[in-house]
Each structure stands twice: as structure tokens, then as C-alpha cells.
Amino acid sequence: MTVDAQLIEHMMEPKNYGTLENSNSEGLGKNPENGEKVIVYLQVMEEEGESVIEDISFQAIGCSTTIVAGSMITQEARGLSFKGATNLISATMKILDKVPPEDAACSEMVALALKASLETYRLRQEESDHPSVTYQISNDCTPKEEEKN
Amino acid sequence: MKALAISMHEAWLATLMAGFMSNTSSKQKLFDFSDILFRHFTWIEAEMVMAKEPYDYNREAIPIKVEKLSVILHNIIQRLNQIDLQLAVVSPDLSHRITHDIQYITGVLAQLPDEEVTAFNTLRKLDNIELSSEATDALTLFLFEESYKEYELIMIYNYLKAHSDDAYINRIFQILVDESFFHLKSFGDMMAKMGILGVPRTIFKEMYQVEDIEAFFLAGIDEELAAKEECKKLSDAVATNSPQLAQFFDFINNQENYHISLMKDALAHWEKEKNV
View 1 (cartoon, chains in turn cyan, green):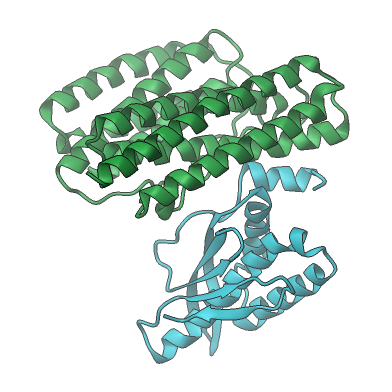
View 2 (cartoon, one colour):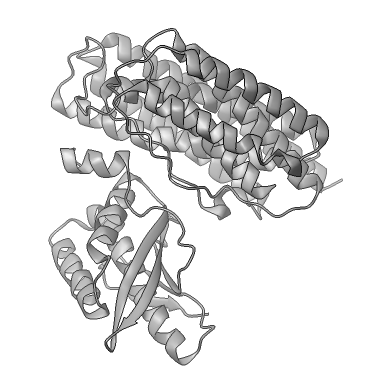
């Protein structure tokens, strides 16, 4: 990894790290190979018929790359509508397609945790106590839903 | 008591970080005070365990980026004064001890000379050592990874120790806590010198609220082996530019051998006790 000023800034002071007291959704991204995982917590508000990420945070069991990815992606996602967040996830996954899988895994885990938390929120609109959704990364970088229980 | 423990946890880390920032004789005072605050934290924790009060190691982010040492010292004094107002929840003896410590510590902190803080300038220069950009990057990543790891280990071993009555295993946990403190202080000092100081992030509950202790020991041994590998790689990366720095990482690497031996010892003891 090349260490630049932006990377150092996120490592010294990761943005949005920790739990979120007033969260109403959360989702997990997991690496089944090594037990690393990311949880993304969301506080979602309904504004003019749209679900909007009012606040966001993340926690991770992972390396510095995961923390940097979590810090950057959650910064980008704050304030986005679900449509915008879905576009952010798609854009991230497209970029990761061009990166060797071993380098992509950490960022993929964060993107999938965000995707899982959006899905958890949607499911909780139908069933208020629906458990958190978990996605796990795979070698070919194709997300698959691991469990919903 | 949980709120008090969180405040003490944060005050301990803020004081430790201030120790890293100082480049004068205040450094040792701040390290000593941070050690005392950590011990306060463990004593409050012991009372929570005895009272069966549920708790975890979650805490707020601790802002530490300052240009003058006096700013963080003032912040620590405020934190300690707030703690002093929360002490009614612990036993009278502990409350008496902490309140008197706070009185002394805040008095000393208020008198410490001010200093310019360079711990956040991101220059990434370590003393007079000229490292290549590759070696500097390797050292930067190592310090972020391993400083967090050492903090994580302190908290994990401390939590396990707080919840175990087994004297044999607790002796081992205490050694590992003490060892990790030395490593954390060494790495934190280097980060401050390089201008990249950061507070270790909070730890996932499941890392310390361990359900399978055998699996924990086995994973811990693997982690120590991985840490040795990282030290070796770093030592190789910096050896050309600085044999002195390479020697330091070989020294840390060698210390991991004894940690592995202790973890194996603890695992064997645990398995033996389980089969009694």
C-alpha cells in the first residue's frame, strides 16, 4: 500500500468509528477466510418519501486498510438517500473489480456491510424486529447473502 | 459505575497520549499518571464485576490533535474533575483513593510547562534516521497496526483477568498486560516522533467477551506468530538505513517468543483444569 497524506489522516483519526447510539439499522460484511468483519450502523430518516442516511458509523475487526476504507466510505455515505448509497456501493464494487482480490477484500467488506445495513432497514419496514443482514465476501468478489437470522 | 469506568478509560488514554506528545521531563510524569489512571480503571472494573454490573469497553472518540501541550493538559484536568464528581458510585475506600490522586495529579498537571506539539505534523521523520520511502511506508503501517494491537491485547487480557479467579492464569495475563504496555509505549513514542500519533480505536466486544477460551489461546498464539513475522519484515525493511532501528524490532520480535510460551502454558493449564 502506498501511504499518502489522505491515508495517514484516516489512520490517525478514522471518521465515524464506533457504535451509533440512535441507530435504527445495522449490517455486517464478513471475510469467511480470516474472521475479519465490519458492522455499519445507520440512523435513517424518512424525508419526502425517501430514506436518507442521517448518521452513520462503523466498527471493524480488521487491518488498517479496512479502517481507512470504512472511514472513507462512511464519510461518502452520510447524507445520501438509499438510491445514492446504492450507487456509491456499485461504484465502489466497480473500482474493486480492477484491483487484485487480496487488495480489494477490505474495501469490499465495508461496501457489503453498508449494503447489508440498507437491506436490514428495508426488511425492518415490514418486520420491525428483523435481525441484521450479513453478507460475506467471496473470492470472485460476488456478494452472497449469508444469513438473515 | 459504568459511566465512571468509561470516563476513567478515556482519561487514562488522553493522559497516555499527552505523554507521547511531550518531549521534556513531563513525559515520564504523564506516563506515570496514565499508569495510575489505568489502575483506577481496573479497580472500578473489579467493583463492577463484584456487583455483577454489565459493562463493556466502548467509549467516545478522544480528540487529541493539539498544537500546545497545555491544551490537552487542560482537557485532562477537566476530565479528572468530572470523574471526581462521579465517585459516589464506588466503595468509600476506592473513592477516597481516587479523589486524593485526582487532587494531586490535577495540581501537578496545572504546573507542567507548556510545549509545542509536533506529534501530528505527519512529517514521518524518526530522529536522525534517513529511511527510504518504502521503509517509511512499511514503518508507518506497522505502527498503526501494532499500536492498535497492543491496546487491544491490554484490554483483552485485562478483561479476562477481571473475570477469572484462577491465580495461575491471572499471573500470565498480568505479564502479557505489562508487556503490551511496554510495546504500546514504544510504538506510541515512535508515532509521536514521526508526527502520526493517533488514539487506538475502540474494540469489538466479542474480542474480549470471549466464549471459547481455548480457541482464544490458539488464536492468540497465531497472532503472536504473525506479530513476529511483521517485526521480522520491518527489521529487514529498515536494516539498510538503520541497523539501530532493525535491532529494536529484532528485540521486540524476540520478546514475542516468551509471549507464545506463556500462551501455550496458559492453554495447557486451562485444559488440565477443565479435565479435573
